[in-house]
Image (cartoon, rainbow, N blue to C red; front, side, top):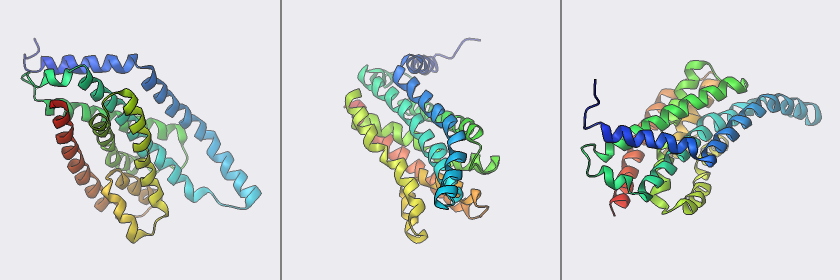
Amino acid sequence: MSTPLAITPLLAVLRFDGLRVLRDRFLLSMTAYVIALTVGLRWFLPWLTQELDTRLNFDFTPYIPLLASHLLVQVSAQLGGMVAGLLLLESREDSTVKALLVTPIPIEQYLAVLGGAATVVTVMLATIEAGIIGWGVPDTGGLLIAVAVGAPGAMIFALLVPTLADDKMQAFAYMKLLGLLPLAATVAWFIPTPWQALFALYPPYCGSKIYWLVSAGEGGWGTYAVLGLVGAVIWVWGLSQLFLRVARG
């Protein structure tokens, strides 16, 4: 059965995007780095916990979910967003985005599919990392909820990069600056609860908050799930409009 004409341009662009990811050494090396870091943590965390307890009489165990959530919820989304963001930037540079504007496929549909792919990849990567680490990981259901709420951060990151940057050199500079966003979500751990809610302005924080709650066996994560998903929709919609304005310009 032949592919409908209206879908052919979108499939062609997505296929080309996939090839670009596989050929980009930077993106592949970043993925390998995150996996290697995860493998290292599997042995480093028990050693660090024991050393701190033995030498300093300091119990590091309560902070393991914090460290794990930063990697699984925040860094995984950042990596997925980095890949999608560079793809969008390249699509701007080679006029692929402008070409889509005159095809039967709405550019918004391309962004939706790319964002969906980045979100799914983020969830898959985080799940694999959780299986490797083994420490500070909640039950499967709680893990998937936390990661799923934080995963739209990938599309937020992906849209910020090509909206702000005009080329890859600028993109790398902005990615270093935007790397503070996941760190801010983790810093919220040390902020008193009433003020901590302000960090929900950055929706992926809600994914980390859910991770902390389910790791501690506490409830109340439903509110953060709603806040995180609704906030992500607002961010992605607003950034999509900015990106399209820049792309059309």
